[in-house]
Image (cartoon, rainbow, N blue to C red; front, side, top):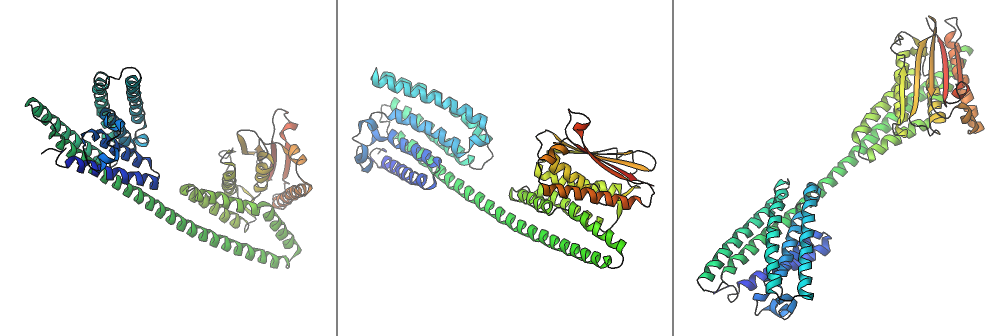
Length: 492
């Protein structure tokens, strides 16, 4: 009994036909080309063995077609090519080892071109199958064997556990093929029918495709697992974001309550004395000019964008800086004066937060800090903030200069006078005034007037009047654009 008469061939091809139909259906369901490649692979295995059929469902289905019966070697070549393509896709070689993928794909296209030219030559010029197709098939076998050896290098290199299905299935088919070939040669030498040797080959086909089918199932399981893990991470991230939102909301509510409480206390104090009332009103106006509500809103929106983009570390980093800045500003409103070191630290935080909306394009530096005892020098709290805000939003924001630069320079004019300069390379104060509305002009003038008034009150106890001057850099050098705010402060 041999496979052509005992039904083993029909059983093998029937099993492969079921696998072909099943995975072809999966291709339309999943829209994943790996199923199309696999169903094509099993389909052409069936076609390569069709010429051995003489009856049965599959024979009735296509046994009368000459293109199926007359070209078993071509069908064999096709399923070899589809096997390589399936292996590359199954193990995701293109993503894991792109260089190897490019090499193998190039070699594969060369072999496909060779097979196509050979078949066209046979059809159009020399239809002698034994001399053309058979010799061409032997050379194709050499090419594909060489490519197969090369292909297994990346197969072993990839880290996915799916490679064991591919390697084991191919190894089993190789063993059974070699065994089948050995039996085939012995039967041929003995003058017996070689058909029984095909039973070993068909068993190899079955075992290989059982492993490949299991591998596809495992691959689908890994995809579902990865998808579930991604969804779980997304849910966890949403929960974290919600907790973060609640924490920020609570902090903002607490800050608002503190500010409301402070404002109420200031109103009570204004009833005690006219001088205290003047100081309190001046302080509130300064705070309003310094703490723009849009700054808080836009800063939180910038931090929110980091959270949405899943940049957790950036979000936490800037959220900590934002909270620290708010605490420092709230603390500063309780004090008439603070150390220059604390003022500079607050300004660093302020510019760092504002820089979020400029994608960190502003280069900010403080010069001369080492030459001055900043811890011992006292200055009005938040004195520098309005000038930094004007430099950023009226000088640098409309500018096309790159890089955008913002500097604070510190130095002693004398033993009793400290000079602080805030310089930017923006459009300049003259250009800015031409492009702003009257309302903004009033706000800027009021902010400058408040700063001068605060400096006047601060300087009274030292007996030396401070000063604030703002000028356009083009007035000094026509080649340079930008603004310099010069502040002279009395010190002990």
